[in-house]
Amino acid sequence: MKSRITSILNELKQGVFEKDAELSLSLLAALAGQSILLLGPPGVAKSMVARRLKHAFRDARSFEYLMSRFSTPDEIFGPVSISRLKEADCYERATDGYLPSADVVFLDEIWKAGPAIQNTLLTVINEKTYLNGAKQMHLPLKLLIAASNELPTEGEGLEAIFDRFIVRVLSKPISSETAFYEMVKGAKPAAEHQCVAQQAFSAEEYLSVQKEIDVVDVPMKVLLAITHIRKELKDVKEPSQDVHREIYVSDRRWKNIVRLLKTSAFLHDRKEVILADLQIAVHCLWSEPDEIAPIGEIVARAIFSEYLDRLDAVQKAVSYGMNVRRVRESLERAHQRGDHRDDDLIIFDHFYYGVDEKASPNTYIWVTDFRSMPTHTQNEPAVRGVMYQDPNCPKRKIVRAFTNPDNIGEHGVELTRVNLYRDSSALYINGVRCPMRRGLRGSVLEQASGLEPAGKRGNVNPEQYETEVDGLFQEAVMLSSSFKSHLFVSEAVSKLIASQMDSFKRQIALLRADVRKLVYDE
Image (cartoon, rainbow, N blue to C red; front, side, top):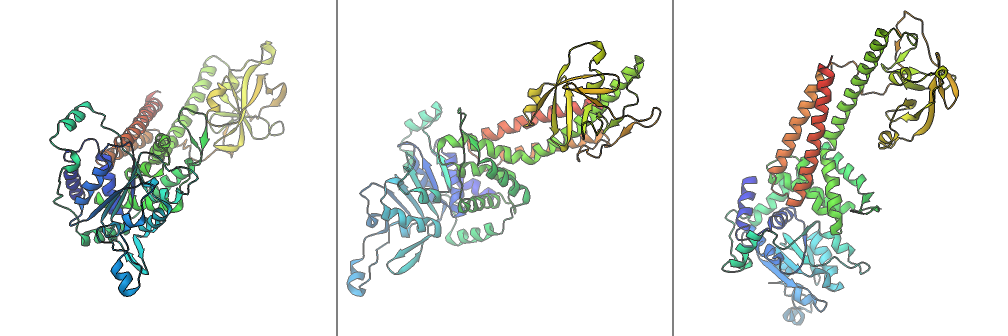
């Protein structure tokens, strides 16, 4: 099927310049039984797309019409049949040659149509039916392409029909000068070019495709990515503005979007949707052009969310291992200097000292911070520090000295500024003396606090992290490859995905450096 679709698209694109996204997404929409809106200025070959798509279906009939506020239902759905009115007293339209008889329909300036036409189009687009008098007609309609150079005006009741156009594409003038020169020098306009798709779908094959699409599976990783998108759409930052808004996407629209994803999977010879198919959703979620970029970034993050979560888990484990090493190295250096003043303090979870429970319950300070802190007897000024709830273990309060609070604040942690110093046996927090938890010298002074968050994996062989990082990188490369070979990727979305991929690779490189440092720096 992928080979067949590739062949059809190659034939449809002959003599056409920079309309790959419009043609490929229109074909996808047609085979999914959905509709598409082309938004762009006049004269950018929007009508040509519809004329080309007719040739993707064998013996297909097309209908196109330029809407105006004076357009009547007769011009779209056919005139009233005088003979039926006389002979059977039935108010029916003669639909042959009009929209109800067409496989591919192109309606230009769609928002200028009157309410009578638009209300009828609601059932035409959604149910593929038309009520002709008392008779319900099941239409052969495979694709309805609408075009406009503007968005529907708010407050005119156009929201319902706008929502029916699942795929939305910005159609722009030719940007490449070379392609522009070829276009203007052509012997005849591209719209007159008569292409014939040799592997066009018959009516029977089209119905068979619909049944095959129904059984395509949507795995949990894709559903979780969709959940990620839905959550982020509730708070979208507008480009270049400090303004956030919610982008509403109806349940019906989501169902149709998933139908598109399943169609994409089938046309790529797959039995289930993959994350690369999700890029199509960028063309389905926006209502205004300035939403495309932030939505694209949201979708790109959702596609990589599973990999980023796994990367974050390894990063936390590696950071944990490096913190443990720093504590041990700090203690070794202190002992080499003959400093044994804190040898009776209990080390919790490998790199914390604990504050006495009566003084401050569940409060811990990093070993390296406490050991390097000035003592009260030295008559030195208190150091600046922060106290915060451990984001990975909310029951635990962490005290840090010599910390850049801005770095912690980036992760949404609420900080309390404190002044810190110590004496030989206690920590002073804002002048309040808090004794430290101590054990017996000579005994094992490392314990678990009981509050250690899961997932740190302090006992895992660090060399296993290398394997995990390499595995993540290979999966990311395969994901990137699936994007490059995808039939329905637009250039704009491709750039967003590539940017996210580059960011992921940079994080992989940084993590690999940390892993190697942990494994090999003795």
